[in-house]
Length: 264
Image (cartoon, rainbow, N blue to C red):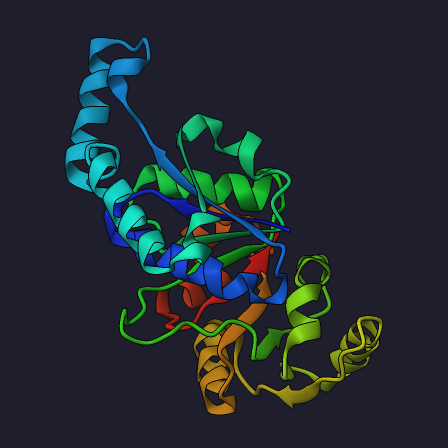
């Protein structure tokens, strides 16, 4: 399995790398690549106005203007892992090249995007190549990251969540506990049948909530169950519409303090 840790800034480097390492526990042969995503306006033929805009973005977002700092964080982190760290590769790419590198990844980890390059990379992974993404919020550096000991699934029996379950099968098989959460009992039979194909027997839970606060209720329930991550389909109505009008995916991504598996 190829796992790619997308990194677009020094601030998100540690979380994405630590999540990739934790997720790789299900496959001892997993190969981890740290993919630093940036933009260097001096290397591309752009108009003076476009270069000015990009340089303003870099100054404001703090992405490709500090590649040395990000690489130093990576080097120190891998060194602290000893022999295990030597197996983690490093690559630097510009934003437009991300798609060709993530299309075959078994998993892509990314911390909360703080730059346009990171958002573009996330969009490419989710929409252009439909990869499984592990979205990681800012996490305490002192605490170890556990991925998949107890997984909660937000289930509504649509194509997005079915696709996500298929991609996340290695983590579901390895989980000690799998919970299925849904606003209606009528969806449980399909979830149980699908998980049974992977040898997984879940515990089911009904979430009583109105649609406009389902994301918040979902996160509260996941915490009460003691799950360490959430699995869900993403952007059922498309990223643009959910950004404008809101939606469960947007609410969960904005409010979560737990890692989230998702794909579209």
